[in-house]
Length: 225
Image 1 (cartoon, rainbow, N blue to C red):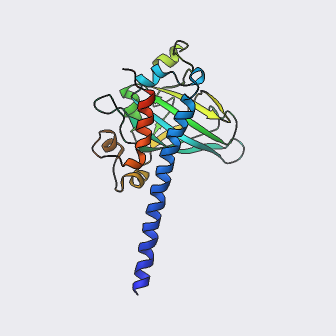
Image 2 (image 1 turned 180 degrees about the horizontal axis):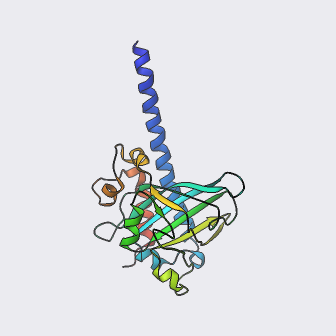
Image 3 (image 1 turned 135 degrees about the vertical axis):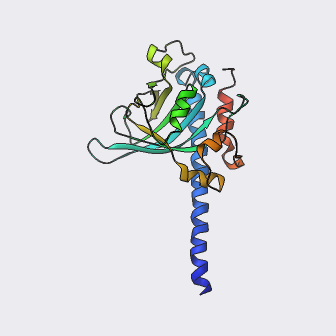
């Protein structure tokens, strides 16, 4: 009888540890994506744009699914400016879904980076589901040392989007894709049920195991907004 009770408890504990490990690994991968993208200034996200952004979402390894037109699905992390404006909050989990049109640049695994450029864009991303291009304006972001090549669309967009596949990094249109909070995965990081709003308002402290993302964002966004 004791073993019948103990076995499910051990299974649940193991599942929790596995979830925490996956969340920590995804956070480390997101930081690695930023490091690699920013490692070549001539082809990177302009530091001036990163410095002005209110939030940054990184979806490492978005996967292609299905046949024919297929689709895209990926899980990532969103971090926003701290209340002081000098640092970054702990991460909250997000998921992105959408059709192949607009963000298939080759390959079956694609890294996505989104810069949220104003408070309105941040608010929309924290809604139950935001459709990029409809609920929140989005444009492919410019690359290089400066943002001087920005178009009017990029200047007014709430979100600037970037994609990397097979080593190619560029601004890319994500219109029609949906981005939503992935509430249940926050428990894997914080050990309890917490909302994205609580995390981004810094009402909960992020564990040291996921601090690497905020540290990496801070490294590349040192200029004043």
